[in-house]
Length: 334
Image (cartoon, rainbow, N blue to C red; front, side):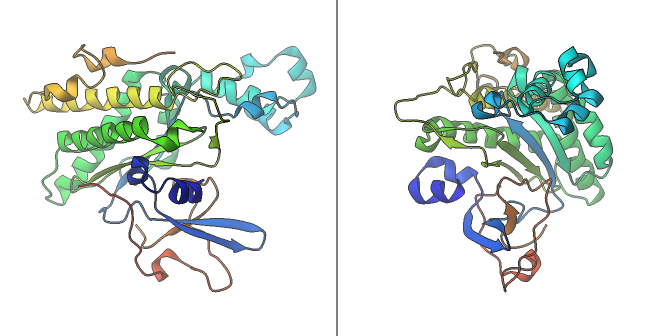
């Protein structure tokens, strides 16, 4: 999908918000894509992966009846009360049952986004963060989690005597999310595709540098000719709605609230143009919509920078990002 985007939509506005594409490589039976390093230029960045859209499964996955004993075990651990008597006897469920249940019990279903993970935090371990993010069940919970991302950068800045405050981090991320949404709404590429399982990668550092990038297009598919979707309407089988713009609306509303509370704490007034980004109502919480390495990184198709390290390739390809010359990355913030 990255190659299609860069080759067929070379002037599309969304290109400023996705990783640059540097071709394919192979190692044995595995195929890898080389993408620009989105963390280039950041200093000790904090990174958060936010899954975007109102569902994480493709329509064809909803039709599959293949029994999955492995997902049954995960269902027993996470949502035992959602298993039917027949599923308990079979000790298996479909992938659709698992993903639909998980989506309904997270903010994916209600807000169109879900915090999936974070990296670079000093005050919390990965296990602690994962436990905390699993408990995010509302817009208020998400606002708190986003605020902690900004707090991490501010505390690091204070230790290193950098002039960065929470408002600067929140304003930077909010501005970049608004720019991303504007690009999505103008994009021909977006208008012609259905996006499942993509993420927004939020990045901020101790110097106040911020970035918001759209990643993970492994489940992105072109719409059939004559099919049009809003990216905001509720999904029904066959309509291909993905909810990515609904998720962006609510993500922007959340960061608007983070900025408002940060400015209140500093006795600053939030600019009216930011308060009114979604509607005439100036209370951001009322805007909730309901239904460091260098060079390119090598990932298997669909891998996220948060869940898979760059892979070593054979045959003279890049063996380590640090051994590669610097390649120009995408638009990376301030």
